[in-house]
Image (tube, rainbow, N blue to C red; front, top):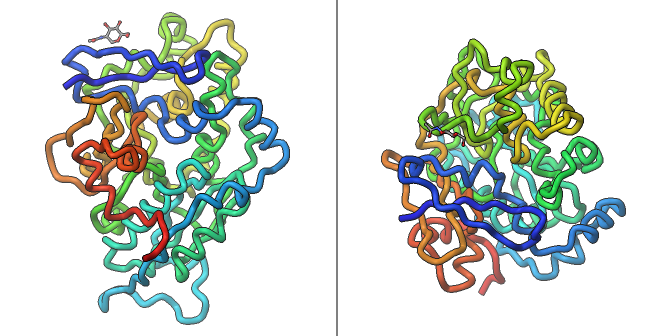
Length: 375
Ligand SMILES: *[C@@H]1O[C@H](CO)[C@@H](O)[C@H](O)[C@H]1NC(C)=O
C-alpha cells in the first residue's frame, strides 16, 4: 500500500502526490497538514470566503441541505455521579469537557463524533461539549439533533488569527477555525481547567472518561506521540540552519504528535501563557526572511510542545484513515487496540460513502452518521 501525502497550495484544487518511502509508512505526514477544513477551501474560491467572514456569515442558508436525524437520549449508568438536578452548570466538577469545531463543511463529521462519544460513554449526561464556530446558525442544528445535550457555543473570530497566518501560496488552505484550538484557554470559562480537544473527522469507540482521566504529570498537554517519525521534515532548512530557531529544541527530545486529539490542562496553559508563545512563532514565520516551516497550524504547536507532551496511548488516535481520495489509497489501522478512529488525511468517510466507493474502514464511521431525514 502506498502512503500518499497531499501537498496543496497555489494550484487550488491541484494535488501533488508524493509517494513516500516504505520506512515512513507507519508515520504518514498527511495528518501534519491539518486535514479538517482543507477540502472546503479547495472547493470554494478564496475570495468568497474572505468576504463572507467579513460579513459574519450565517450558516443557515447553506444548512438547507443539512438534515440530521434526532439522536436517542443517552442516559447515565447507575454508578455515575448524578449530575445536579438543579440546572447543572459548566463549572460542575464532575463534568467531562470536550471541545470540537463546527463548520458547515465538516458538520456531518462533528455530529457523528458527538454521537459516538455519547454512545460509548458510561456517563453520557456528564459530558459537556464546547463548540467553536465562526458562523451562526449551527447551534440550532446541534440542539435539534441532540435535544438534551449539555453544550455551549463559542464564536471564534477569524480576524484573531488572520493576520498571523503566514501569507504564502498556501494561504487558501489556512482556514482560521483550524487555529481555534490555540485559544481554548481564553475562550472557555476559567472554571474549566481541563478539556479534550477533538478534530471533526473522528469517532470515539470507547468511554471518553478514560481519556479524560489520563494523567498529564507535570505536562500541560497530552497526546499520542510518534517518536519514530522524521521530525526534521516539519521545519525548513532555514529553520534548522539557524540556532536562534532550532535552539528551541535543545535539551528536548521532540516527537511528532497529531494535534487532532489532545488533553489540555487549561489552568497550566493560562498560567504559562502558551497562546502567546504559539502566536510568537507564527509572528516569526510571518516576519522572518524565509519560512521556518511549510505547514499550517501544526508546526507552532510542535515548536512549543514537542518534547513536553505527556504520552497518551496510541489507541486514542488511530489516525491517517482519510488517506487520499485516489482509489487504492485506503489505509489500514495501526497495530494495537482502538479507542478512537481518526480520518485525518484528505479522504473523508462521509464523502466516500456518498460516492459509493468507500474504504473498508469507512463502514466503522457509518453507524454514527445522523445525516439524512428520519424515515
Ligand atoms: C528526515 O527528513 C529530512 C528532510 O526531509 C531528510 O533530509 C533526512 O534524510 C530524513 N532522515 C531520515 C533518517 O530519513
